[in-house]
Image (cartoon, rainbow, N blue to C red):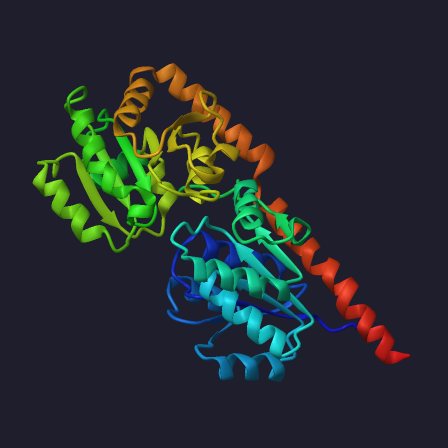
Length: 373
C-alpha cells in the first residue's frame, strides 16, 4: 500500500480546548504522512478555522447516516474519536462501517458520568483497538470505573511547543493596556469558566487574599457557562478592582507573561494543558491536587499542590509565593526545565504516530498483502 492512509478525526465540537488543540497539533504535524479528515458533531468553533488554514478538510457529521456514508465513501482506514459523544457514536458506526482501526482519546476524568454513560463506554470500548489516555490517572479510572482492559490503553501525556514565543507586545505594554501597574502582583487563571474547573472559588480566594495583600490583580482568561455568575460574584464581593474577566484570548502567552502565579483550582483534571503553558513561561503554579495534576506539578519544586476546594490553603500558597520572589523564580525555572525535558510536543506527536503505524502494520497492510496474494 503506497497511498497515504485516510484517517478521520471525529470530535464532538471544535471549540478551543485541550482535546481540540491536541487534534490540531497531530493533524498539522502529520498531514504529510497521512490523509486527514476532521468531522464534528455539534459546533464548528475556532479550531476549525485553523484546521482549514492547514489545508485539512472539515465536515459536519451530525447524524449516524452521514457518518456511515462518509466512512465508506472516503475509505477511512483509521477512525480516531475524541470526547464522550464522539467516542460512543464513532465506535458504533466505525464497527458497522467495518473501519479497520478504531482509536479513541480519553482526555478528561468525566466525573459527571452516570452509570449508563459508564456502561455505554464499557460496551463500545470493545470496538476499540486502542484508547489513548493523557495521564496515568485517567488510565487508572478507565480500568477501575469502565472496566476496560489495561492492555488496550496507552498513555500519551500532553505536549507543548517549547519554541513558541510571545509576541512583540511586551509585558509592560500588556499591563498598560489592562491598566495594571508595573509593580502590582498578577495572579492568573486560563481555562473554561465552569465549576468543574473551580472558577467559582476565585472570588472567595481573592477576598481572602485581600486581607493580606490589599493591591493585586486576578486576570481570568476564558469563556464558559459560569461567566455571568462569576461576574455577579465579583461585583457582589466588591472585587471589580481586583479581578478582570478578559474572555477568550488567542495570544495566551502574552498574558501568561504578565502573571506572577498561575492557579488551577479545578475539582477534576486529567492532565492540564494550561499548567504546561505556565511552566513553559517559567511561572510557578498553585494547583488543586486532583487527577493527573501531580504527574506534572511536583509539590514545592515547580509549584504547590493544595487540597481541592480548600480556599484557605490556596490563599496561603499564593501568599507564600508572592512573598518569596527568590523561591518563585526557582519554581518557575524548575517548571520550565521539567517541561522541556519531558513534555515537548514532538514526543506527543511521535507517540501518536507510533500508535497509528502499529495498527497500520498489524491490521491494514497485512490484510492488503493477503488480498494481493
